[in-house]
Image (cartoon, rainbow, N blue to C red):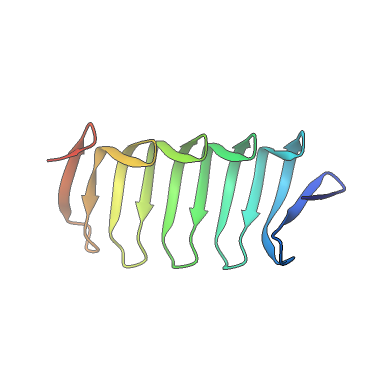
Length: 122
Protein backbone atom coordinates (compact mmCIF):
# COMPACT_ATOMS: atom_id res chain seq x y z
CA UNK A 1 0.00 0.00 0.00
CA UNK A 2 1.16 3.50 -0.66
CA UNK A 3 0.16 6.69 1.07
CA UNK A 4 0.32 10.25 -0.16
CA UNK A 5 -1.20 13.39 1.30
CA UNK A 6 -3.59 11.51 3.61
CA UNK A 7 -4.97 9.33 0.80
CA UNK A 8 -4.66 5.60 0.36
CA UNK A 9 -3.35 5.44 -3.16
CA UNK A 10 -4.08 1.81 -3.86
CA UNK A 11 -2.83 -1.73 -3.56
CA UNK A 12 -0.48 -3.43 -5.95
CA UNK A 13 -0.14 -7.14 -6.56
CA UNK A 14 3.13 -8.98 -7.22
CA UNK A 15 2.99 -8.01 -10.90
CA UNK A 16 2.72 -4.34 -9.95
CA UNK A 17 -0.78 -3.92 -11.44
CA UNK A 18 -3.11 -1.54 -9.64
CA UNK A 19 -5.88 -3.48 -7.91
CA UNK A 20 -7.96 -0.57 -6.61
CA UNK A 21 -7.84 3.02 -5.46
CA UNK A 22 -9.29 4.58 -2.32
CA UNK A 23 -9.87 8.26 -1.81
CA UNK A 24 -11.09 9.47 1.53
CA UNK A 25 -10.47 9.23 5.24
CA UNK A 26 -8.08 6.67 6.64
CA UNK A 27 -6.69 5.63 10.00
CA UNK A 28 -3.77 3.33 10.80
CA UNK A 29 -3.13 2.71 7.12
CA UNK A 30 -6.67 1.57 6.27
CA UNK A 31 -9.81 3.22 4.94
CA UNK A 32 -11.86 4.55 7.89
CA UNK A 33 -14.72 7.03 7.55
CA UNK A 34 -16.18 8.33 4.28
CA UNK A 35 -14.54 7.37 1.04
CA UNK A 36 -14.62 5.92 -2.44
CA UNK A 37 -12.99 2.74 -3.72
CA UNK A 38 -12.60 2.55 -7.49
CA UNK A 39 -11.72 -0.75 -9.15
CA UNK A 40 -9.87 -1.12 -12.47
CA UNK A 41 -12.94 -2.75 -14.06
CA UNK A 42 -15.01 0.41 -13.46
CA UNK A 43 -16.84 -0.75 -10.34
CA UNK A 44 -16.90 1.39 -7.21
CA UNK A 45 -17.96 1.60 -3.57
CA UNK A 46 -18.94 4.98 -2.15
CA UNK A 47 -19.73 5.22 1.54
CA UNK A 48 -18.54 4.46 5.03
CA UNK A 49 -15.53 2.27 5.89
CA UNK A 50 -14.14 0.81 9.09
CA UNK A 51 -10.80 -0.98 9.38
CA UNK A 52 -10.52 -1.14 5.59
CA UNK A 53 -13.96 -2.68 4.95
CA UNK A 54 -17.32 -1.23 3.95
CA UNK A 55 -19.21 -0.64 7.20
CA UNK A 56 -22.29 1.56 7.55
CA UNK A 57 -24.15 2.97 4.55
CA UNK A 58 -22.93 2.91 1.00
CA UNK A 59 -23.50 2.40 -2.70
CA UNK A 60 -21.77 -0.23 -4.81
CA UNK A 61 -21.81 0.03 -8.57
CA UNK A 62 -20.57 -3.13 -10.28
CA UNK A 63 -18.88 -3.10 -13.68
CA UNK A 64 -21.69 -5.31 -15.07
CA UNK A 65 -24.30 -2.63 -14.29
CA UNK A 66 -25.66 -4.15 -11.07
CA UNK A 67 -26.02 -1.78 -8.11
CA UNK A 68 -26.50 -2.06 -4.34
CA UNK A 69 -27.59 0.79 -2.08
CA UNK A 70 -27.83 0.19 1.65
CA UNK A 71 -26.11 -1.10 4.75
CA UNK A 72 -22.84 -2.95 5.31
CA UNK A 73 -21.24 -4.64 8.29
CA UNK A 74 -17.64 -5.88 8.30
CA UNK A 75 -17.48 -5.87 4.49
CA UNK A 76 -20.74 -7.78 3.93
CA UNK A 77 -24.12 -6.48 2.80
CA UNK A 78 -26.13 -6.17 6.00
CA UNK A 79 -29.25 -4.30 7.15
CA UNK A 80 -31.73 -2.55 4.87
CA UNK A 81 -30.85 -2.23 1.22
CA UNK A 82 -31.80 -2.58 -2.41
CA UNK A 83 -29.88 -4.65 -4.95
CA UNK A 84 -30.78 -3.90 -8.57
CA UNK A 85 -29.55 -6.08 -11.42
CA UNK A 86 -28.66 -4.50 -14.75
CA UNK A 87 -31.75 -6.09 -16.36
CA UNK A 88 -34.05 -4.29 -13.87
CA UNK A 89 -34.75 -7.13 -11.42
CA UNK A 90 -34.36 -6.18 -7.78
CA UNK A 91 -34.39 -7.33 -4.18
CA UNK A 92 -35.64 -4.84 -1.59
CA UNK A 93 -35.42 -5.46 2.14
CA UNK A 94 -33.20 -6.69 4.91
CA UNK A 95 -29.89 -8.50 4.41
CA UNK A 96 -27.95 -10.54 6.94
CA UNK A 97 -24.25 -11.32 6.42
CA UNK A 98 -24.58 -10.89 2.66
CA UNK A 99 -27.76 -12.99 2.29
CA UNK A 100 -31.40 -12.13 1.65
CA UNK A 101 -33.15 -12.06 5.02
CA UNK A 102 -36.53 -10.30 5.16
CA UNK A 103 -37.62 -8.76 1.89
CA UNK A 104 -39.11 -9.11 -1.56
CA UNK A 105 -37.75 -9.72 -5.04
CA UNK A 106 -39.26 -8.16 -8.15
CA UNK A 107 -38.93 -8.81 -11.87
CA UNK A 108 -37.77 -6.17 -14.34
CA UNK A 109 -41.35 -4.86 -14.68
CA UNK A 110 -41.60 -4.29 -10.93
CA UNK A 111 -43.96 -7.22 -10.32
CA UNK A 112 -43.58 -9.19 -7.10
CA UNK A 113 -41.75 -12.52 -7.56
CA UNK A 114 -41.04 -13.92 -4.09
CA UNK A 115 -40.70 -13.11 -0.41
CA UNK A 116 -37.92 -14.02 2.01
CA UNK A 117 -38.58 -14.42 5.73
CA UNK A 118 -35.65 -15.02 8.10
CA UNK A 119 -33.53 -16.06 5.14
CA UNK A 120 -36.01 -18.62 3.81
CA UNK A 121 -37.69 -18.27 0.43
CA UNK A 122 -41.49 -18.33 0.87
